[in-house]
Image (tube, rainbow, N blue to C red; front, side, top):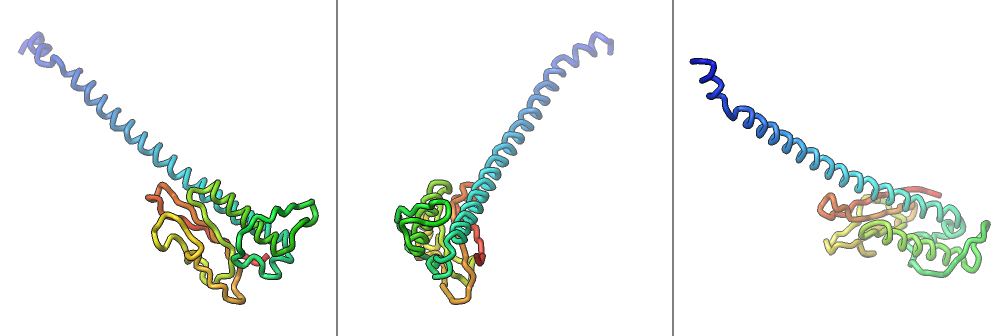
Length: 180
């Protein structure tokens, strides 16, 4: 075979190489886009868990600030109510310790619903903290599903639930057990 025939038989070979390289590059970029999307979802889930953690510690700080309400048991699954209590820097004005506990839980639940998707929470005495949640699968955690047993001698438990889009909108739970 002459060198002229050899050149003619390899015609179009570089075009195939370019097409294969473009295909490999496209697959790599699709994989990178998938990793980016997955990373964003995981970051959002971590953010929601951080918010839930901060919200639980917020309520525990409120309980420590109202020590009389804690000692009276006013924080054991109180009825959340807006009593328009105000803090003057050293004490609560315009409310009893019980009203302040009810107001704290009311404000806290407002914050949960604003900052977490389908956010819900409870503070109660509970000997089995990990229970509770959306047991009837209706897309929200209701007061009948909190799982508080209110047994004397149990620790206080703050339970926070939210929906995580990463896991098919399943409810996630953060639990804080403590004794102020």
